[in-house]
Amino acid sequence: MVTIGQLLKDARIKKKLSLIKLENKTKIKRVFISLIENNDWNNLPDFPVVSGFVKNLASSLGVSVVKANAILRRDYPPKDISINPKPDVQGKFTWSPKLTFAVGIGLLAFMVLSYLGFEYMKFIKPPSLEITTPKESEVLTQNKVKVVGKTATDATLSINNQSIIIDQDGNFKTEIEVNKDTKELKFISTSRSGKITEVIRKVSVE
Figure 1 (cartoon, rainbow, N blue to C red):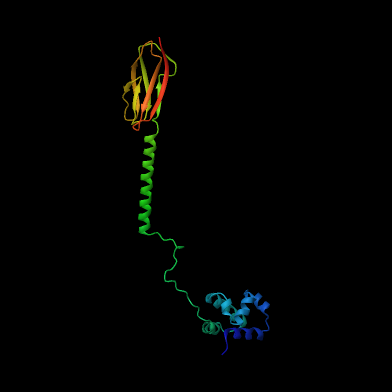
Figure 2 (cartoon, one colour):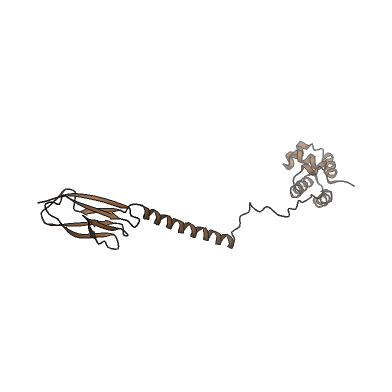
């Protein structure tokens, strides 16, 4: 029984072609040609590649391509296929409803934790306090001074121990009575956590 390797080798010798010449003609490396002629399937690529080699060689050597391919199918040994009862599919990523749910829960948790963290930091830090009026070392000519500024929305404010009302945005605007003994205006903003921000404006009353 003639093997595919013997069939192709006999055809090559009949045409007086060396492995090098056949390699140049078919663009198939001579090492593969030699392996096919020796039916060395273990060192050859998978069947589809070998089948392509054989068809090319048969066509170049004047051998029936159909016949050569049929003999190859007969000669090519079946390869054992390792079956993994638990296939490793870790490398293949698929987006599933379960993953969508998990990502959604993760994003929601992240947003909640971020909000809580922001609120906690705001809770424990001293409140902001900006004084627009009066300016530092301002000279006052009346017994009342206009005070304008802004503090944290959840803070309480006092000026020289007088409680001051702030609006929903933290703004305040009022007048404070002063006299010639008044040398400074002490602004104290106190947060819900008891943190204090203090600003002192030096003034003089004429």
